[in-house]
Length: 287
View 1 (cartoon, rainbow, N blue to C red):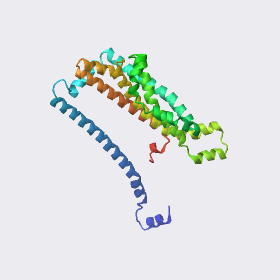
View 2 (cartoon, rainbow, N blue to C red; view 1 turned 135 degrees about the vertical axis):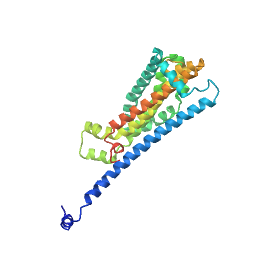
View 3 (tube, helix red, strand yellow; view 1 turned 135 degrees about the horizontal axis):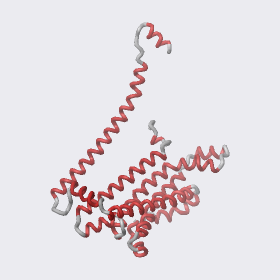
View 4 (cartoon, rainbow, N blue to C red; view 1 turned 120 degrees about the vertical axis):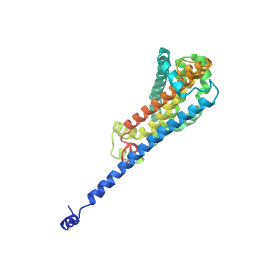
């Protein structure tokens, strides 16, 4: 207890410093809660608005052009009771997951190794800048001619299109090392293994996770697009088949499935990123 507090207590004046501190501490908590409720309300409002626009378009447009949301959900429920639906979803998810794993296993170590060397970075920059500008769909006819409409063909398209953001972002991550930490490790003669696992890799992890997030979205988009254009088994081919048979509710049901898959993938990666980068300033409560 300070002298000022003792003097206040002696003359009967209540001490309000603790109350003020508690009020200041609780104010950021209330602000965070209000911000969360506002974001949640905005997301729910946007979803309701999108459904209303969808319903209005289904009413105003001609018949068989756009089904209503209720009709699409009913059709999706009917399709989910068939084994062909889950087989198509399983093929798409398996192709997407395998392509993402291959791009990660190849792109991240190769990018970090290239980025750690200035000579390797300068030597490969022209080749990588040229190859990553080629649209993956442009090579679809060639891959389709070689492998036919199969899951292997879709996997090749996914790898050739999604590996570049992961590879390039890993190269940039290796080049963004903190000079002070590098000089400190050299001055204290820190062992190479300790430098790699305690300084180099944690410093590159935020940049690598950004590349993986972009690559994950591209993997899913390329998987469904390649299936749609080539007729390979999966959700994309089911969309094409429903369109060919003029089964509009089934087509929109599979489109809704593709949107749900994208939502699940993004939420799962967001949770993984928060778990992996829990130590980073962007994920700490102080931020």
